[in-house]
Length: 115
Length: 109
Image (tube, rainbow over all chains, first blue to last red; front, side):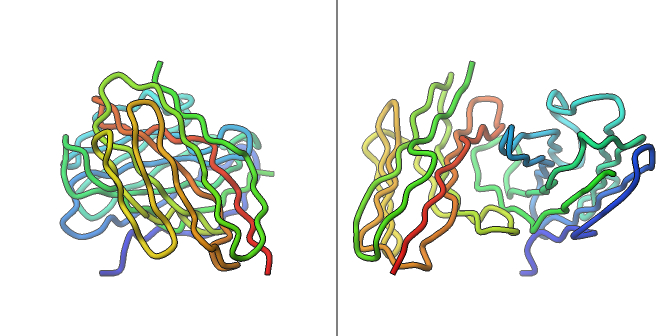
């Protein structure tokens, strides 16, 4: 299996620009999670989906952040407009079982730098 | 409030010097406790899942244990390739993972 795939791996943009991060979960996994990792706050859950439906978006910092999962094999996290404080590594993870304790497998992450 | 605290923040060991990392937690309804390893520039890599107090899991030089309040990751005779950040996370009733800040382990030859 290819594992969780994220793109791009690195993104450098200027303040005010729109940023779109992409994720392809492991085939057959029914839950997808978006995390953000910073030195100050560690690894934080932003939003997660079960069977393509958003279940909990309480971790999304502001209305500038939005996430979609149009089908079982693709999700996006969009930031519009971006700000320097959004600079972080964004991880996508997926797990097999929706609504049950199950191992989450992480992608390699997207390192976002907002100038 | 669900919370995970890992100690120490950083640990330096000589090759072959065994030690333990601690993960203490408070959570309403523990569904599982997870250990991950993270290398610089990479995503967290799954190591173990523990579900109930008294449970133990082993993999090579690593052994994870769980009590009602904390988990330990024991590292026996570590090698330089064991150097990484080790993350502990708890899964509560909400199905969300709550991560600790991690322990940065450096093993020197």
